[in-house]
Length: 456
Image (cartoon, rainbow, N blue to C red; front, side):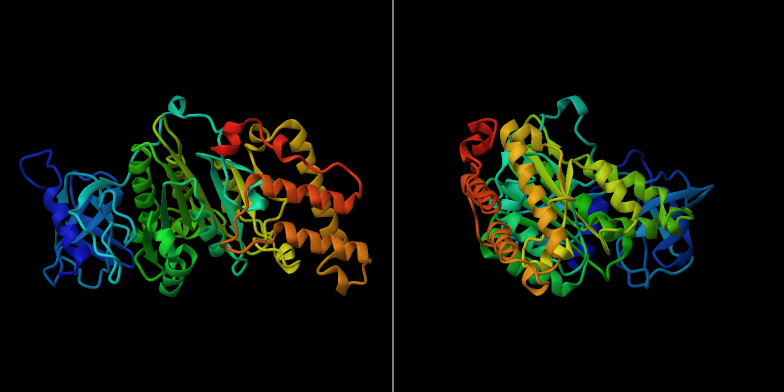
């Protein structure tokens, strides 16, 4: 029996029973990602145990009901499930295998360490996966700045402890590199990552290169690769969020990275289409728009600790009309957009200052500094519009060439390059002086509202 199968079997035995006997039924149909069962007394999100030809039981979650029939989504392949196989209803909710206070682990959506991952030192406990979001009035306001060491974020689009941010990017613009850079920010005690629908090769690259050995010392990575069943892919970000919540209640500052919400939404869509739902907006079902807020609302501040969360969304272009992009923007406290035009200027991370938004900027920056930063954004956007790609190739003036070089010096950073807040604002001041020779530069000491914000 596999490690995942063993955990599912043990989980099924440990689920608390609300009655003296189990309800049993049978499989009536198997198709794609769903199994239809004749089963009474089931409710949505209940767990069932499917008996297979191999003898290894397979756990599944009830996703829809119609009369006495339940459609269940198995947490594994359906190859061994046959029509007529027995089904047993388990009374309890889904929980992940969890190794408290152990970092460096790479686990699947049920918390089982992947083959080749670091071996756990202690015993596992059960961690409920689907929890409620904190009560609205229990949330601590967003006010304390997180210094990431990245000038394009800290100076232009500052983020606060407990903020929820979207990262919208097409393929190949350095999304994983930026996630790795954020994961190395010193102000986080714990980093929890959910990699959803990625290729195995990309998982290895993120763990070994983007996070690296130092990053993994305080990280837990939850992985569901592209070849796994939709139920597992949909589960990964919820499991990662549950792990982040555990550490938040330990009064720690947690960074939660979910890559990506797009693939999570596709997994939810696949399951809901199998359940008979109809698409409502460009192929997405209503379940997608129901489950996304249930996921992202769980992040944020509590009275104990904080979960600062970043969720990636895959896009084709800035002009693309994607209902998922609009929905995610409406749910979060800001977003960064990676731009091909910025990348072609030789600037990485390629954060577009005109399209990116942090909803806490005015809470964190002083009024004077906010005006100065707005002017720097205007300079950036004007240069981008006037020069196109590499001013020297388009016949622009030497002054434009020099400004482009200055922009690259200020905003282009390697994954391991870190700047203090003072350094970032000093560079903005130098950039402004390059544009307007003799003008007063931004003063670092006026950049933030208080020492508490700057040093948090």
